[in-house]
Amino acid sequence: MRAVTWHGRHDVRVDSVPDPEIVNPRDAIIRITSTAICGSDLHLYDGYIPGMRAGDILGHENMGEVVELGPKSSLKKGQKVVIPFTVSCGDCFFCKKQQFSACDNSNPAETADASEIMMGHAMGGAFGYAHLTGGYAGGQAEYLRVPYSDVGPIVIPDGVEDDQVLFLSDILPTGWQAAENAEIEDGDTVAIWGCGPVGLFAIQSAFILGAHRVIAIDHYPSRLALAKQMGAEILDYREVDVRAALKEMTGGIGPDAVIDCVGMESHGLAIDNIVDTVKAHTFLGTERPHALRQAILACRKGGRVSIPGVYGGFADKFPLGQMMEKGLTIRQGQTHVQKYSDQLLQMVVDGDIDTTFLISHHASLEEAPAMYRHWHDDQNEYTKIVLKPDLPKGDIQTSKTFEEELA
Ligand SMILES: NC(=O)c1ccc[n+]([C@@H]2O[C@H](COP(=O)([O-])OP(=O)(O)OC[C@H]3O[C@@H](n4cnc5c(N)ncnc54)[C@H](O)[C@@H]3O)[C@@H](O)[C@H]2O)c1
Ligand SMILES: [Zn+2]
Ligand SMILES: [Zn+2]
Image (tube, rainbow, N blue to C red; front, side, top):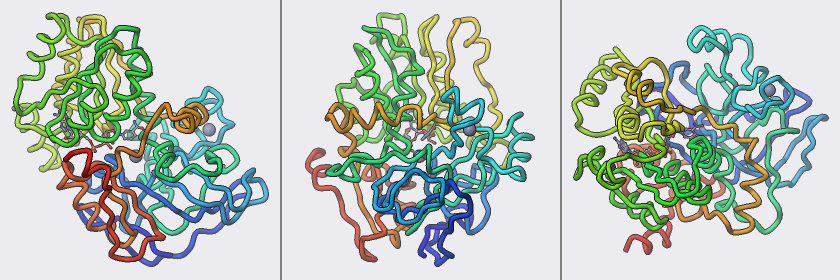
């Protein structure tokens, strides 16, 4: 089959690789119909996540049609399913607590050991996301093997289009969990750093969960425009002093909750960020947590800090004393996708949550190298890319509604 493979920093290719096979009775194989490129894939593309090997198949936002089943799968051939990015057994101590991204069974021994040395405990498995999380092949390919297919996949009702539900695999529950972790109370003001897909879904979720005001921060005009359309007040961090603006907008108090939807690759020319960038480029560090530092300093006393943005290791100049002295609550983590599947699917089907507004491009699998470049370099024009193995080579479709929306 054809598959999108990682070969090093800024080197993504489309290769012919062996088709996946059933290796465990609980497995299923799906034929991929849609698979998205995520902000998390940029951390792999930029070479910041340890444990990638040349030839690894990328892709953790996947959906498709069930084509093959192990004897213990509960799926049926022909079903349309969305696959959570977290590979979770459903049976362990953590899965039973609905902490699916902490699954203790899905990371095989040899990779779990390295992950335990680095993190203190072995991380759960994830599709297409390095050998520290199990080395599972991703779904930016024609086919995908899905382990534990009796607990993870979300079966999609007839008549629902791929674009409506694909993001149940990751970014929609991630935005939702981010808002839930912000412990929003009615009337709260919530500030959200980053208006990428995760930030935009966090904005939508924050309003649903009772936020009175959402203030969204980024610098790409198109992403800020989408945030504004969703009802957020917006700040371009190149034009204003973000902390001063937030203070002024909240009567000197600061936002009740802050959400970091940026993660380890913060942009901007702030001094701390320049130092972090030099360190990252000389392999003296991995994190560029400028947005998170700013969020912690901006948050009101006794407020909440939610961190869906991905970090990979140790951070310098972290405002620990500020967190302590201000009495902030911090919640974070890889998303427990399966915990939210039923609730969010229902909200999508009922029309309470729209996900399709986000997609700027559909492209054939063969266009993946160019699409990764655009996703990295042209974030203003590319708000979300969906790869479709069924599209003929060379096919790239720019979403009309997206162009119209921004006209
Ligand atoms: N916790 C999880 O399970 C989970 C799941 C999916 C994604 N993520 C992470 O969430 C983060 C966002 O994902 P995404 O797909 O939206 O990524 P993205 O790269 O599309 O969006 C990030 C946005 O942050 C903005 N940004 C950069 N520096 C900023 C700054 N200093 N201030 C304000 N905004 C700034 C960028 O302009 C960009 O629009 C990433 O770190 C990703 O790895 C986490
Ligand atoms: Zn993702
Ligand atoms: Zn488990």
